[in-house]
View 1 (cartoon, rainbow, N blue to C red):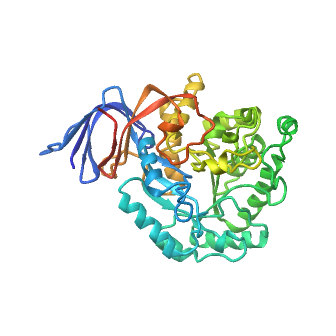
View 2: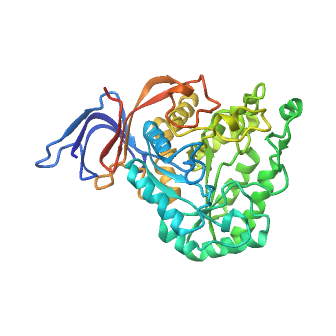
View 3: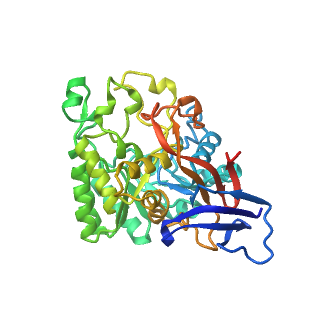
Length: 428
């Protein structure tokens, strides 16, 4: 398939490009920008006048719910949602059922994803067998099967000795460990940010120090082991200050934030809205403002959707009993653009796009998230000016729950190209 995208504004932060230019795609790759190569005859021409032509989005956390939780979502439904959201590469955590702790399971998931011919799926392997925090997994075999890093998802390794061994082993072989900073005991069973609001609503709290204590421990272990760590979903101002210092000291560290935490605070729980029940919990306005500053200055490397489809049976419950999580694949682009829009000119469109493409790709170490000639043609075309209203019935994901229901958001994806194949087209 030869595709000619004409008159689009190519925004490619990795290569410092922001200009109206034509793009030419053949054999799954970008073969030219600007002028057509000799003998190029397009099978399809896309007029992208008024549209932004960006790298396909790279999402650092999307639960596809397979294997094991097909009643919540399937690979088919979620990869379709990814296409609608312009997400062409996504990282999925290992907390499936069974857990991704054996190479056979990883190969099966990769194979199932390939047959869909949609987004590239990059699994994280479990760091410990069964995510139990006791025995380390066969990291070499899992890497060979296609894992790009190792994670405990939401379960905490209680035994610091085990965590140290895991970091030592990963450090020796250059594997990245993806961890969420959460103390095993402080805030255990908590459902909301510890503060006046949780007290007033009678909800058990998760204090900020559940994050900071875990970070202190982790940074000490990193100093001792030289491991590479990616911190998932930092949520607090105090946590970000520690990350900032650790990066200055030269620790091999990256971190991301969930798109929800860029915009919402614990006040958005309102009258026990279980759609706002997330992990980590939505924090105070001060924390949210700190997140925005850290995104701007690069302390936070990337925004992820933290896509976690939950079905009605687990969401339509009293706040404290509801399962945490929200759908996010279809909202990632819009929430990044909304951040830029609300910055009053301090954050450019290019910066917002960078946090969900080039910067996220750098965390994974994968060659995605950019549009240079010779690169795989993973492209997202979107209209930055068009707005849409988030409605459950319009979402393609099987997870219909999000705290943004009813919000009007900027940015509508018009087409998604994966490896030169037009996987989603809403141009007509």
